[in-house]
Image 1 (cartoon, one colour):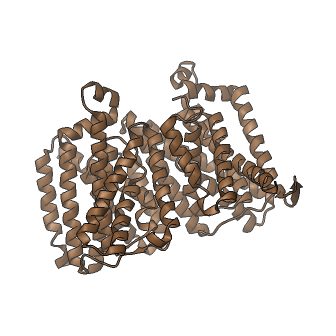
Image 2: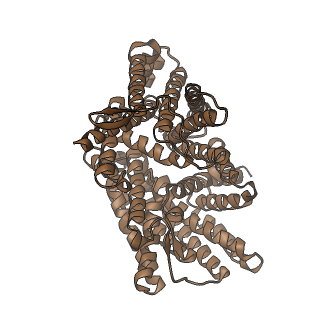
Length: 308
Length: 292
């Protein structure tokens, strides 16, 4: 993995993105819609990978940040109808605030304890959304009156390039000295501190960056779906799917998370004929990847490159 | 005054059930450092087996309960041999990363079981035919005998577990392994044998807790997540790895939930316990009786 330089990987990724950006010319709107969702999911998974893979924070609650972003944007649009970009920006900012709230316990408690705190954060947000139904739409979900565009192709390009830019930023960050410090503080916070690195500052930064991209992606996806519901943005199963995407894609690789997300969405679509059993098969495949190929898809790719 | 007794009695039964469920979870973590996130799924599997035996094979309540416990036991050992052990012994995964791989894998395994149960037996709630029926009056509160039965069985099982761990040779090996795994291997005890013993005990606990829960409240495949989360929360509140801490925490959470349900609204049932959990983690991150 070290062998491939950051610029080279980014150039390859850019080439792939450019090729994929021509898909709307030859693919049906239905498949574009699926991929649009997969790309947003990819951003969720990459943001999670930064926080977990690098900073070592066991975060079971990616949906706390995503849900905060999506619901803030949606509720704002519902109440005042400001320009959409303002709603999206507000969603991202709210998620950043959520990230800071989530970071506070992380600076005090570690490992499974922090993992539980994030789980609790999700449950509290979920309870709040369900209880405050007049504002949030409760269990039925929130309808968002405005859309960015109704064109499948345009929505696809927005998601694709948003994912590409987020991926480039997160990947470059993970390969930068900051990424190394994060990795060091994730593995041994005391030693990293003893080497003179400000662990607290870096961890807080990781939370803020992860929250920013999660919230932004959540808000954009809410506008794409023109609705927000607990089942799509907050529920723990959504968080689990994000974690699975990042792990089967390859932890600590950032870009692998995108592969995992596309795999998950594509598989649940391909296996749709199996009906209710399809989820079972998808999760079983993910489990096999975790058990047999702990490096994930990205690990397999880079390893075969080294041999070849 | 009746309300007071009602909360006291209802809270006691539900708390005992929480205690039984969380004890197994704490045991596994204390001995092998494994947080088993398929906990809820194993419990639901036991309930559904007991329900299916009674509802579809028309066996009596005792046989149904026994089948449920056996399935819980088998599912627990299957989890160990299929998921946990291969990861623990894997040479491809770095030692410090094993914890997260076990978390992810057991989570996936739990969701798989959940999906399979939903596929085979639908998402509908299942209630197991109770062994004890009827109603008795305690301090003016009409209490189902089943509730008393639940509390008694929970405490009997916990007592047996205590005897097993403190008075038998295998149990003492388990206890020693929870204190110092390397020391145990130096004494010539095979650590993997200890793990198998723990997962077997855990299986019985999960089976019994599941079947009792099925008789008391009933479960559906949707209960998998909340059951895991509540066991996790209780164990963290009590202090990871501390069984007595988990017992105390189970009563704190059980009573807090019952109080909220009766005095405020059942809709807010879980919220105060969650807030308490967050507060405890700020003030005392290692839980009530935690060692690490």
